[in-house]
Image (cartoon, rainbow, N blue to C red; front, side, top):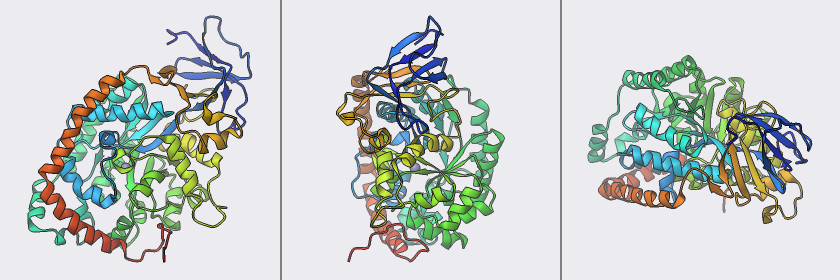
Length: 500
Ligand SMILES: [Zn+2]
């Protein structure tokens, strides 16, 4: 749109973390950037393209601090489910994710995000056996085709969950151990070589997508691998994203393995820094939070996933009080199904209020909205998104103020956090391009996509069926082993609910 001409958006009300009253304002956009914002009748070039935003509320696109686009085709495929169950079956059901499946799944996730008011995300794909340029391009192309911004961090690890938790491998039946042995991963040098090659070859056709690194889970990577990835991230000025202390099992296993918390371990091996984002952090203690804050690390808070997998309630109040930057994420669809950032933001506000009788240390709506916009922007390492201000990217969501969600409009910040659910999204602009208009994506036919997605379904079912015996065995043994581990006492309690 625009053909090089400026765009002037007139008649809307602008809601931003610095503009909580949502007063009327016009926005002038040149290229992909907001050049000016001001009261109605803002000056604009004569040939500027006019967008009429009467009866619209404009807000900066929400930013998803943590997701896995490759999960999208697997939404609503499990009911009672834990992180450990998820990780123990992964070696079998993640196998053979084709480039086509990876592209389609990521596209489904990206479309759901933009249609629900989200304009950028940190995506952690899992290219197996190793990240290649082709696998990365498939993911990147999905975002480029939807027109969405994404930082893409292909996950790697060199220790399976069975080896990451002391004693786990010993309780597995011999047949399962043998099958795992056959799936043994590449050496540290090979993984780092692949990753370096990716940085050297990475030439995306759009600046919407960026490359980052991901040692998938803190204790699923050897020290050499984690340090090697951290060095690569520094060399290429890229972000580093890892899952940290997500479940109680992980926290207990970390202390058992390292004699200290997982965070203390990462701090000691020198891999923390301002380019690092840790996901979840449910089982961080005060010292951990201080360590992360002192190193300038940011945290992706995934309240829906933390509830869905039974991992507990992250102590976001202490994080914010310590000055830790917190963003909000949905997590992948296999962990928490939908990719609705309005919902994730509301869950962050709600879950923070269940820890005491008066909710006094809960997040206020302004804190939740800030986290979902500016906080998440920090986690992505992007300094020019998350606000509607001059100099920031034109990533703008247009909400229909005639929607029931806004009838009547009271406090706009309270309303966007506690009422809006995505149904009022009318249009979405990313980098000056409208990627959603009148509630429909501009670049994708959803009917065609639905037909393509149907073809993906049998693959997961086949993998589950092919491996049903081994998976049943793992469920039994793993459930017992991890259950015992999570029953052990730990220095903090993030489950927080003790029924008589
Ligand atoms: Zn995750």
